[in-house]
Structures are given as C-alpha cells and as structure tokens.
Image 1 (tube, helix red, strand yellow):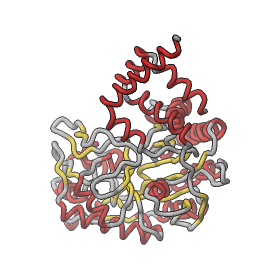
Image 2 (cartoon, rainbow, N blue to C red):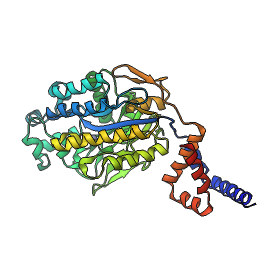
Image 3 (cartoon, helix red, strand yellow):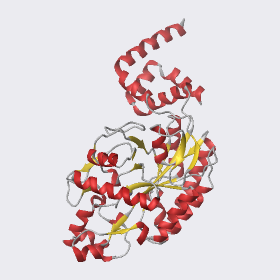
Image 4 (cartoon, rainbow, N blue to C red):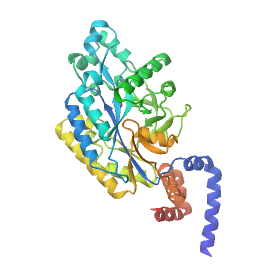
Length: 412
Ligand SMILES: [Zn+2]
C-alpha cells in the first residue's frame, strides 16, 4: 500500500517537474553521453620560448607515451599553439609590428613538437598567432610604455606570461581598460594568417581552437568559421572583454559540451583543472573532478598550461609526476578509457568520420561508443544533480532522490 502511495506521489511530482522544467530536461537529455571515457589533456601556450622548453616538452611526452588506453593508444597532449612572438628590435627600429616565428626562430622547440606529433603523443591546436595584441603592442613599444619594460630589455625570447594580464589578450586590445574588440577586418586577416602559418608548420589546418585568455566574440567565431574551424575549446563560458576594473565580461556565461553556436561550430568544455604550479590543484583534486565528469558520462578534459612544465626544474618534475599519477588513477578506475585530442572529439561530435583520426600523422582508431539508455539515464540524473540546486532540494523533499539514487547505483 505504502509503495503504491509513493509511486503515485512520485508520478505526480514528476509530472509537475516536467511542466516546470521541460525545456531544461530535453536540452540536458540531448547532450552527448559517452559509454567510453574520453580523456583529453589540453595544454595552452606552447610555442616560442627558451631552448630548454624543448627538453621539458620531450620529458612530458615521454611520460604520456607510457600510458595506454583501451585501444592501445598513448596519452596525447592537445598542445594549444602560439605561433609567434614580437620581434622587439625590428618593431623599435621600424615602428611597425614584426614577428619572430616558432618554426624558423625557435627550431629546438619546433623539433620537439614535430617529434611529439610523429610519436602520437602531441596534437597541435591553434591558440593564437601570438598571445597578445600585435597592433597595441607595437604602439606601446613606440611610446616606451613601462608595461613593456621586461620585453624591451630582452631582445631574444621573453615570457609573455610576465606581461600585464590585460595585455595578454589576442583578439582584444587591452592597452587600456575596458578592452576593445578588434575590428572585423583585422579579425579576418589575423585568423587567416594564423591558420596559414599553422598549416605550414604542422602539415594540416587546425580544426579547433581556443582563444588566448578565453577572450573572443561572435566576429572571431565568424572568422574561425571562414577558415573551417569546427570546434571551439572553452572553460565552460566565453568572455568577450574586460571592464574598467579588469573583470571579465561573460557572454554566454554557461557553455555545455556539444552545444553549437550560430556558425554551427561545436563547443568543447574543460572540466578538470591540473595547474599544480598555481598551488590550487593536486593530482587528487584533479581526480575528484575527473570522477564527476565520469559519473556524468562526459569526456574528462584536463586543463594543464605550459607554465607548469617550464618554470623551475623541480616544479616541472613535480608537475610531470603528478600528471603521471593522475593518468594512472584514471586508467585504473574508469572503464574503456580513450585518449584523444580536441580536434578529434570535435570531429566525432560533428559526425565527420567513422573513425577517430589524428590528421597530423594519419593514424586511426575505432570510433567512440555512446552510452546505453541505462547509463545515459544515470548520467542525466547526475548532470541535473550537479548543476541545479533547486532540483536537488526538491529531490530530497519529495523523496525522488531515492529512485534516482537507485538508478545511478545500478548503472555503474
Ligand atoms: Zn594562453
């Protein structure tokens, strides 16, 4: 009798919830759910640097090569590439913007990247032509702006990460706040030039991209589309600029994996932070985030910037051994782990191929498997649980949390 009462009560609750949140439930259900566990390692800012970066990268990739997934593919770094740095001496003498290019001016790093591509432990992805706004940089250089003192005192390589944060944006001019979006003509030319250089350096165009400092707008997406970019890597939001006080302006503030923009480009989302040099993340905290992704049948997409590996030797070794530990835990605990790179996930989500293909070395692997209805239902409930506090509260008040818990328990 009591069972019948509860079943009737829950059905009524579900009907009311459906009326209230129908569009949310449908949108959440239509997101991609994976039976495999795709694991991506997204690493921003590789590009021009000190020669020792080549050696550090090789050490990192050697560690990745030891980890094999369920189809015997190695762990692979999606290296988000910066293609150039300003040529300060030339800018100062001419007043115009000039570049030093990754392939010709930084051959040791370029060679390490090429080896990673052939070894299948690295897939390049366009980050930006440079990690700053060239026009604004040239103007500040001419004015001998004190914010460029470090750059101007070192005519060879210097670390753009040491620039004032607003100056590191690429698709905005951050020389004064609020930032100004670059013009559509500049955007088109900049992206076309970067794509051209990228294809020449790596033998294939970038199918996906991530904007420096996560700063980009519709105009940039349009320029990317004109260059056949199909997927955009995000941290779960887009920032179009920074206000007077430097705060980022988010639009949209929430992006889900697999959603599309007006140019039919697919958004990808990083959901695991492994930036140990910042002192915020450890292999254990990253694994906890990976577990949340796994329960929701989402790809595990790890964010780990170059600077974790290019500062002191000790920091680099700690970062590599921590990532080693994290990947070991992921392979040990999750079923059907599949290492892949972001452009490959982008192609899969757009149904472009029957296989997973590394376009940079032509190797192929079986396609990914999507979740069965039972696994999908459990992951769907987890997505609602982790994202919507009100629904969780209602679940506890009505007792609906109990059947939901039962479904989740029996699916894993
Ligand atoms: Zn960056």
